[in-house]
Length: 570
Image (cartoon, rainbow, N blue to C red):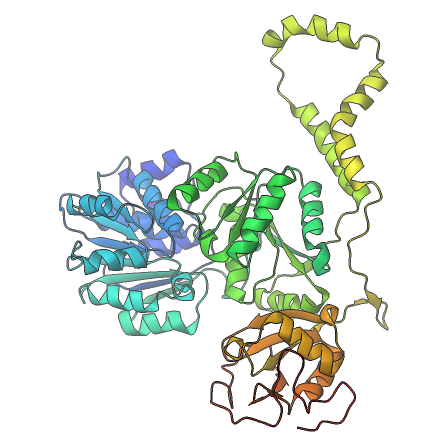
């Protein structure tokens, strides 16, 4: 294993990373730093989150930038303000024993006038989010013509967040003669397009196989009914009392709701989402980094760029649709070579999605059984005993209080004292979990004795929000004509001109046959089973329709619409 010194870094930088505690470079640092130190070639680094990418580009960047010049020489673009602040902080720490740089973080949610003032003082390195940097460009408050190095960190995330046009505009203000360094966890075609349009013969480095997961992450899943999802989450948290983790939700509303419910139920939790002010976000992140906050509930967008050490668990309250989202979520744990656990909470219809992710990541997923009430109580009791065993006793200061304590307890035997002490904490969980039901979804046995679950089929329907369709009406539609109730329908994803919904595989053909050929508010209805990928709607989607004989009103699918089992008349 090489040392940082052997990679060609200046002595001051080597001393700085040693003071921080870096001993040996990670694989991406070992392979990227010598290439980047040449300073004259575009570079693409593909590596999972938590592998040390910031030091991989940050250390050579600091070595190459001239601290005697007040010109802005380096621009680092990051998808979120949290990641931008983290990068700026890391660069300052790396350079502490090396050179004095003016490193300015430019991001939304903070005073733009103060950021402009700092930039105009002579910022050799600017770390920015695309949106705020565009604001500074439009105000002519920043000069990018002197840029020599551009770093696109977590490029796939920036594109996922819709920053493609912003990136195009920003890069158009930078000189043609510059070095562009791109780092990404995944390599979708949009990132390839950036390479083609803005880079010349880049050096490409892949650390680990593309689309493979971090080997230090243990991937688990639990199968749960929708109504039991929150109760199952609490069981998992109670069963892992030493957890320091992230819980991911799909929406801001769900994030806030789950966080508030957890806090109400006595958990040390808080939320992170886009509706918070920058001051609120900073306060939450400070608490989480200092570990005074045990559980952070977040949306995908808000949590991008969170770089916090020693996160033990990532829990997906809902499994994401996009593979990249799962990769980035789970990558918040098992950083810097440490171990971590990723737990996906799924319905039985989503088992196929888990198998798909498992195949892409080339990492096995293990089913975790939701703990029973008795198992939770036992785990909590043992955790309490462990804390007792490991507690640091201040003999000198507690000595004067011991006589009074001993006198108060002298009528109890050792056995009674242990039982009463344990019961102080144990009774609370015992009362809550007494007669607690089993939340695990039961499986059927296959021919070979293996467990089998009915997996879901994803259906496309060429109706969406523009047709006045909502969740309730879609369920009513399927119920009335295919005889399926709410419990038979899985996730519903409403779009503008079309939608997707899930049903059990053995009922998919029945739904397709029942709904195809009808009309909804004069629009011909088309339903088909998809391969899981979103369609643009195709065919009739988005085009105007001629009115049919029947149209769906508040009461049904149209006057001429058949009930389930009746002959179609449209």
